[in-house]
Image: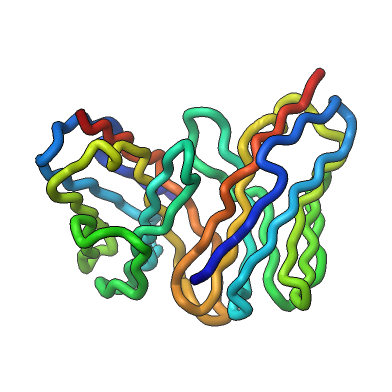
Length: 111
Length: 116
């Protein structure tokens, strides 16, 4: 069945450093890859997404890259700040009307 | 526009009971998906509805069911509750879904269900 693997499960960085979270998907029909940030006790919020016809997308300090051949996509956060501390989820969605989420990465940004 | 709303926000039930959760999508959104979130399992897909039709279902037992009304509001029902059903149940809506027209899903605040 469809699967999305996400690594690492926990990531601790110093304020100002970069953070990278990687995901691998199994369904080759996947064509939409959103990233969500979930703070404690809150709903997941979309932070960036990428479609399969694009290899990279950037929004200020956040960027996502997609390698369709390898079925990999990654989230890059530069100049991390304490408020970036949260759980981040990657996801993949294809023609089956189903979004499969990774298990999440808990990011700690130390001041 | 108002965001996705879910009711109730918190619920306590006992084993064997049944429960119905409600989700009102953003106005104009026709796709509603449901997810179960637990600390150990992350976000697990339950089912997706579009124009009152269930288009896909996740790997959950038949005790989990849902429906969507003509105004796009959706309900999910869990019968014969088990302790393991304790979780945060999230719904998410989008305007369109599927094929080349993938659009952002917006999540509701969730319903936290505790089964005793």
